[in-house]
Length: 490
Image 1: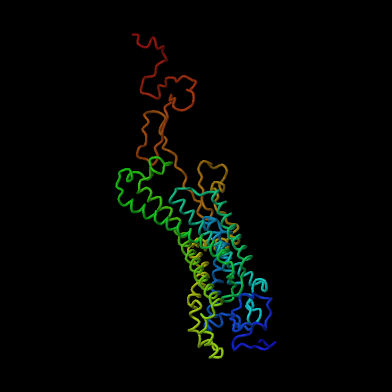
Image 2 (image 1 turned 120 degrees about the vertical axis):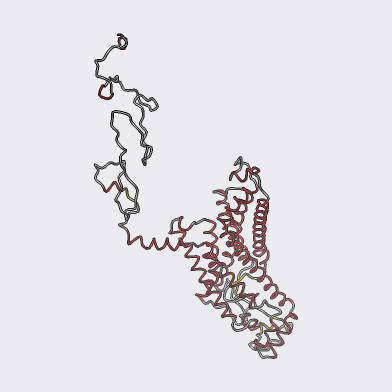
């Protein structure tokens, strides 16, 4: 029988009857029934008993790395917002993916800053109902992870359409991506919070609870992760096929022409032309391809490890014999967990695996900066900060604006104002005498074309006055003007 106010469980366990059944996340208690009336529970948090003492230090390191990732994401977002597009090559797929990773990293940064209490009492962990910071960190983690996966899926789908189907993704795809990239994660996370909830389970960051978590969150997440993997490898397979086909293409049309005979028909692409087109697309998108592979690997790894850990803890609750050796070791050692860690390894995932998952998730922002960041961004920020100090400097001016208005306005150049404005005037063409034979200057820098006097190639009428005989322009003897009918009379 249970005695009011007396702990009938051996150390370090506590009798569940000593604590309220309301408040905190009651289902998160790690308890085993000893008799019909007594259930002994492990003290909260459970990670302090199944992992070494340095586990908390490792989680703090992971949260610190997540903080660095947040700084990287902020730098990218501010660069895309403030700098011109020629410095950043911004794209909505990259921007939205960075926002998703930024939200996910906030799930690690919020607990690092606020240092929330993980336990409601000695045996009960806090949940999102009893601790608002828990709800915030858990929501950030789920929403950021799901949205990051969705935007990785959208980038993979966009690349697949461009390479394999020659589809030019445009405004319609952008609207579809915005609706699906944010709508599906919001719906999925809302269902997960309503039907499952989050609580402190592994470290200072809240994670999704076991109840209904597979149907509400993990299965939809893994479905889109699987689709992304399939689409990505299908694209890689097509690229390999095109490359192998181009090796055996020796047709003359391929060597002489870089375009198909009819651009609107896909069938007219020769293998080598198709390979050149695919190579150009991959050369432009290789950064995004690497980011997609990293995000997908992290999400799948995290999902598998966490689901396995969750199921392991749930099996121990349902079958106490699985943890019998560990519990007996704790009884015999009077609560010295270090002597029983070897027995705890059979019911939980090793700390090395857990830390690998946390670090991979925390590093995503740094990967984004390495692959999506450019040196031109740093140069753009330098120019932006120097701009207030160089307000009087004009970018380009017309040089003839600095000269007298009487100067010939046809001779001008667009030069930088900071450069020298000493212009070399255009030398006029060599003036030949009006009389005698005109010889073009074939060896000069510029050959001028002199239109004949009666040329009708230009849209101007012939001169109105009749050309008169000029004896000074020829070697003929000066004579009076005669009638044409009397010129040959003797």
